[in-house]
Image (cartoon, rainbow, N blue to C red; front, top):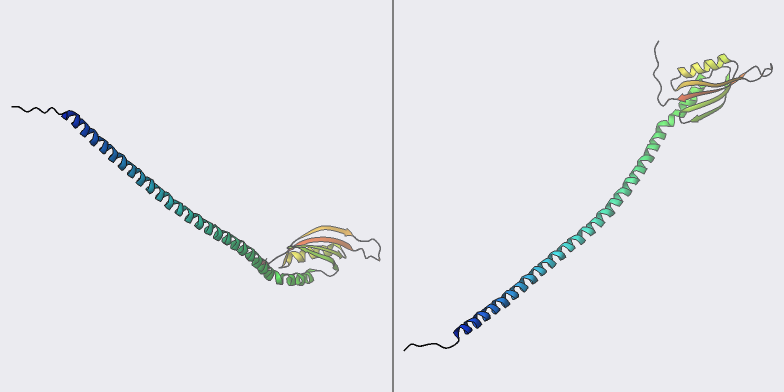
Length: 189
């Protein structure tokens, strides 16, 4: 006799397949949650590491900016000190020039001419004086031009001082010249 299974095997098979499907679905959801959690934790670790690097860079940048400010302050101080040193050296170089100036002023003034005032601004000289005649002023200008320490004589004003015999008929003059830092070479003619 043939045996016939009348149990609802198809239904049991469907239930078994549904149970397997649901267990696989649950396992997949669980695995997906684990993967998402792992990715989330990894991203948090990466963000935390990057933030610590950023904080380190900010601290280093602050330190470097402070050092740059110190370097700039030192550079300004250096410029100021170099400028002072240059002024001191310039004064040292110009120290003998006043001696040369007064020595030359005595040498170049002709007899019959007198200096009333002498003003110096930088290397420019303004000489106010009195001479007995125009020829004495001309000789004075030639002497200045021939001097190794003075150059470029220019006569600005020459006036007759008085007409009486008592005044001697002198001429007042204003003469401009320049002082040289180094003596000019004597030219041979």
